[in-house]
Length: 272
Length: 235
Image 1 (cartoon, each protein chain N blue to C red):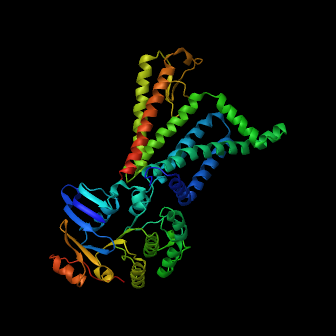
Image 2: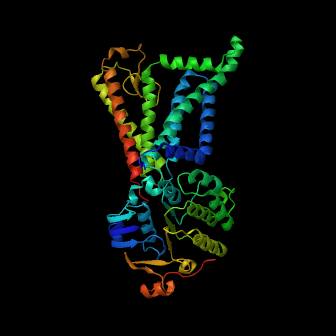
Image 3: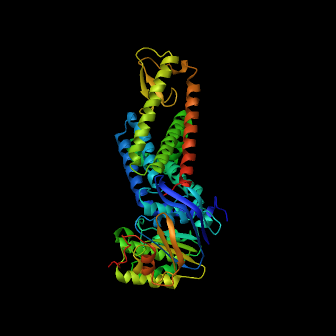
């Protein structure tokens, strides 16, 4: 018998996860859809960052339900002793938390934006637009936009999710609070570090205001780090920007990969 | 066969639960794991099914290490904890979802056991009492037909007719080669079905033998402690 990975067992796990949690997933989907709709109706470009926050938060909210409630001995013993390998259980978590989530969020985003903008298009242009062409233009828009932004969004989601996973796995009590605290500490250290680094090596014009990139949609400088200046953009002047960005990406990749591995290991070695 | 060799286990180093424990359990028996509260009954069950890992020594079941929790091993093992918590599903749905993981699961048998326990297969578990949930999970545990079945205080929270139903279902579903280990501190509830008794006291097994006399008397004679275990039958 293959004790590491078997597709039939994985399918059973995926089915089980859906049937046990579908109410929660539908609720989450409803909240996300409503939020996208609200942001789209308000329709100001400045609110675009809220989509990113929504994507990020939704991805984290899913995590605690992906494995088991460790504070509940009955449920967690049932889960740990379910005849499937820890790798299959971990991959099932990633399937829902990452693959399916990104796919459903993306499609939902485009669909709801379509629903919201369709009446306007109809009113103004009197020319109905099919959803497929709307989707096509959305995909073309994504393809033509800066890939750095999508890398940034994707990496921050992976990082936050992996951190949430390991927190949920390690701490029986108040894992969400602990996750929020750890995240706050990491972001603070990261942003202070970046500020010092950038101040030292970049000759940023006086009057520039540093902003943590995770709070605002500006991502040009470094990993999610930006500054404002009343002057026209001068970002291109700094040749090291690309280097810093890549370095940041690499650090985040290593961190989330390590956290994923730790999560899997913790699942494997979990005792009750 | 369950083999325990030189097993030492603790939650905190100062308070050892087991020290150099040795035991062999032959298949084909219903073992009663008896002991006072805190004697380590649940811990021993957790070690045998792979929910806890020995600090030193070893536990093996049919030459497999439970702590590895390999699917091939888990297919042959089912553990019913004392504290039951089930997802918000009906027993029918629960069995549909989980039954597929166990090759020998028999849905007809599950329905039959639920009927004997008078548990509604289509009532959501979230609206069931603790006793009903326990009966639903025990019905499932027996219907998956695993070679090893671990039951932690199976009759706690059950009313008298349910205890009788449990005894009759367990006796009827017990097949040759199967091993059932049930922990209890309510000896009278289960003494009629236990054919081997394991007594735990002071971090070690003080008795592991076939039952050839009254279990309660055996227990009282073997365990020379003032606070004897409860022998009451809860109603």
